[in-house]
Length: 248
Ligand SMILES: NC(=O)c1ccc[n+]([C@@H]2O[C@H](COP(=O)([O-])OP(=O)(O)OC[C@H]3O[C@@H](n4cnc5c(N)ncnc54)[C@H](OP(=O)(O)O)[C@@H]3O)[C@@H](O)[C@H]2O)c1
Image 1 (cartoon, rainbow, N blue to C red):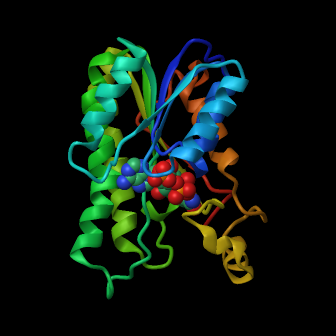
Image 2 (image 1 turned 45 degrees about the vertical axis):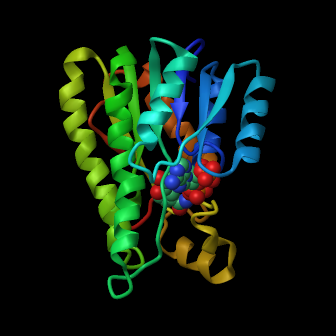
């Protein structure tokens, strides 16, 4: 589908879940991938090894994106590895806090916004200098941004903020032929949504979807890969819903 031979890619949160599947999907199309991770070094090593076995280049970088200087440190190291040209940035790393409005703490709110909003925005700022004509940025939003699920207002608000950032960056970068989009998954079976592994969680998930199976990381990864490719060259400023027809 997408010819990404020789393209340089940074995927944040690529040690697990949707980020891992995305890193592998982009590598299958020939991209060289920086596998960013937080705490799971062994999992990141496995992703790097899998990408190399596909014949693509890969390196891992650790950076805590809840720290104010996390994006800056990640960008600095990425530039040392890939040099002067970044073709694709997938800002995927994110956290979820299952707190209702009654339970939410200030610390949880700040951490959610630090990882899910501040980090991707400053990562784009720090990598902008090595984005060139035809580079593109893809954020990972969520169905939660447009449809209340479980009452987790703060998490949903981080994704709403990301979708606003998409519009602003797409507008600012368009004249430089740099595209900015987001993919908004529904429930996807990863550690973040491990409740779908219970009978009740699975039933609740299927009840709100048109398509009657639980989403897999690869379902989202292929949409990201399409958006990252030249096939999507006329799409910018968009949020693509990839949710099996959730809450239709
Ligand atoms: N799963 C879903 O149902 C779902 C639905 C809609 C949207 N999303 C979004 O999709 C994205 C990926 O979610 P997922 O389900 O794949 O999550 P996941 O399985 O929990 O993986 C999260 C990834 O983000 C990294 N990460 C988290 N906090 C970090 C930090 N402080 N510093 C650096 N890295 C950090 C983790 O790295 P380490 O493990 O190495 O620490 C891991 O690679 C998120 O933005 C999430 O909001 C998920």
